[in-house]
Length: 385
Image (cartoon, rainbow, N blue to C red; front, side, top):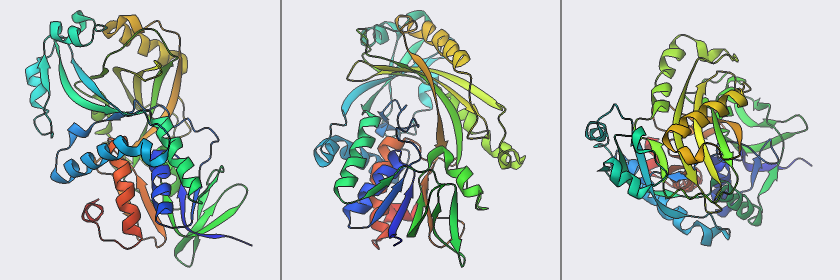
């Protein structure tokens, strides 16, 4: 007998896992489909940052504070430690740039940074090379272990009676102008609503059904370092994010029709020098972001590792030679800076929950609000997404 679910969620990253849990917590019958047994996605390779300071509107301020509080209390709610902590974020300013001028660009945010000169920056983060910076911008930040948080959501979802099946969705099923389910290589699954939370694969999956959505992706590379005795006190990132400049090229590429063709060529790429150390003393170093319109495309791991290590060697010399390996994932985003949440393309039975910025702080509260919205509760924030 074929089971018909209330909701099918496509994608087991943090967006799909959080939404599955929230829907099940409200009593819905939910199927979560994830193609990998051990997903090596953007959630797995995330720095785990909670940039609650980066809100630029009243709605974002409210949402990001909700997200911070959810993450603070998630271990107790879900029964697994998500390793929440408050951490100092330092944004490095290149020697040729003026920290005060760079800091002016942060005036739009809910919390503005403190400017530190190189001696003060080194006192806060001794691993920094003072010759590689003209100063840093200091901000309060939150941090979690994204992989453990995702696992906690999934295990809590299962305890609520949810179903997880490890199969890849190859296409949506449409019956009488309504999306009624999905097809995998093994089975067809049916639901009242299908919600695409597939991150970097969202665009490709929708295109297979003739749906064009303003959600895109970059290919990212990071180096994963096993636990080390070296101590990094802060989360380090650049003050001028080159990745955002890369993402701004998307509109131009869309107008040229490039995103309608999945090709393996690297159209553009940037490297942003950063590092984070988790509670178990493991580290991520990164990162390279590249535009390749084929989600199945790849980046050379040897070339990527060499480039990241060279950049880290300039900024954080003691981390550059630590043993580790280079990894690749897709990172979804929406050019507007606002995620896609809700119905799309006038397709009855189809919803999208993807394209987040500051995913770990914004997706959990939006998942909670979106779940309630789907079950009939009016929500002011969901209405404007």
